[in-house]
Image (tube, rainbow over all chains, first blue to last red):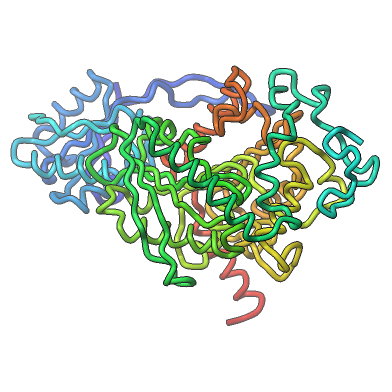
Length: 138
Length: 376
């Protein structure tokens, strides 16, 4: 499966496995292929350890492909800046083909507090239910 | 002439000539699933009608109005509540700072610890009664997981326009200024109300716009939008008909009734399209036989032209207090038909909380276009 790795608005790195697609009928035009089956998203707070060139990128790509999940890895380390990543996901979840109700926040050992801070920020500022941050090791 | 006006064509000085109004209390006019309440006994409405009747002395209105309000409040406080209800006396708004306002804060038990949604709920009642028992405020707060803010505004027999708008403005300002203490997010406020509650929610939104507040949305039912009758409406009788609306608003506006000199803070359709630019996202639910239905449609078109996010739902074969609203404002027995309307209404409230449908760029675009055309 093709897995893309790209920068998002200078905020960090997205690891995005290929979406399923389906054909839909568009009135007057004909058929069009669109993405379907939106995937869960994980905002993975590591303080910027995940980059396109990091040592773990191959393993992370495999994890995303195997689990059909999108990883969004912010470079930021504190609340407000991390909030920009949640805002990005919230505003772009359709383009990203993510199920916004299935977004979770995870952190590595060093950034669990920051990950939880992001959960608190998102609960305050956005209108989505979010579970507490959990640990996720590369 | 139908029973209501039989032998009394000059009811309180209002002339209703033969053939000028249609008796929609005849069920043949109604949607078959929502014909409840079509045969309402006009006698039941007399205690309300005297509160805005121009032929009843002011002292009598005051005494009767106070007694009725006291009964409503005693019923409310004696009832069992599913939510926590707190009562506050809050300072008056900038335009009437010395007049405090009573505000209730309704807290369901499914709230978050902080930064909750808020439902600014305006109780209806023709500006003659404010009966919180008649509206499902607690159910709505529970369903939408929000804090309810319920202002106890002054009624027309206590004080005329703009007293009620000042009170609602004061309540909103207080809520906004004390958002953290109240456990709400000041940018997640949806306004709602039925009948006069809808009218005042819309009118207050114009006041709030002038003071820089931007509620997330407004969802109203059978809101009065104008006091100026149009040829082609004001033709129906029934519960809250054209005559009642005329007298109710006349009592509130006094000499300013039907005047173009008062703006949308009195009645929303007094707005120009320009006034509507930057108005909050608005969802209106109306009945075909609401007395000012044409002005309602006109107000909707003004919002459209101002590029406000707006939805307009009008129910055919329904009048102002039809069973179609049974779930939203306790008119008649709930049915599958009324539940359908309530589900749609509730989904719009949820939309306003969930999505930011406001369009701030419309204001910027307008200013830019104005500058281009007329210069600085």
